Image (tube, rainbow, N blue to C red; front, top):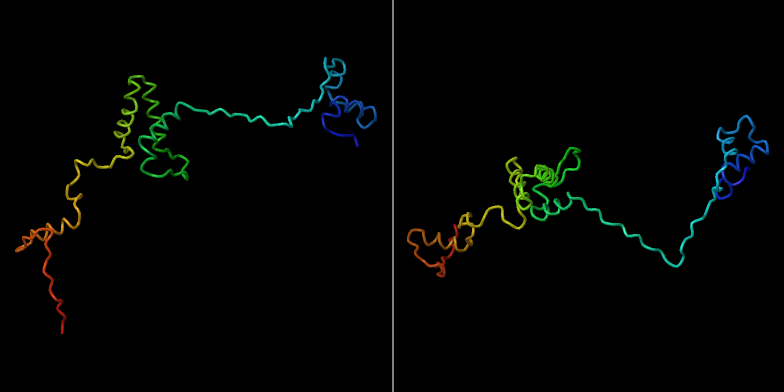
Length: 187
């Protein structure tokens, strides 16, 4: 066997040289680089130096956080609008999320440079609304409370009391009880 093939027991040149001396590799089969290396050896021999491991403790490498400009826009979009009206459809390779569309439109407006930073976010939302993408702010009901029908806020007991008061011959207040009758059993 020619010995170990690890770099720490010799260089490629010394291994080829020793194989040629022992007759395993013939002079006619020597590599092209052999004569050049023999004529012009390096100033320092390539030497394998084993890295010294510190036994007394490992230094933990701190990986820096990588933030892109898009990430700030995305974070603000998710904070204001949430994840959007539907779930992500990752089965389609051409799927673009609501937030990604928002970021693309935002960067488009930002590159035009016509809008100020404060109004850029709101104008992006308006432009997406014009394109047919409805964005709902988080924590705000879908319909404003002023425009809601007052009937929706009433309790069922109040509605029943109001209906009984409106019934012919019934002018009772909600606190009054209706006289009960014995149930009629069919014979």
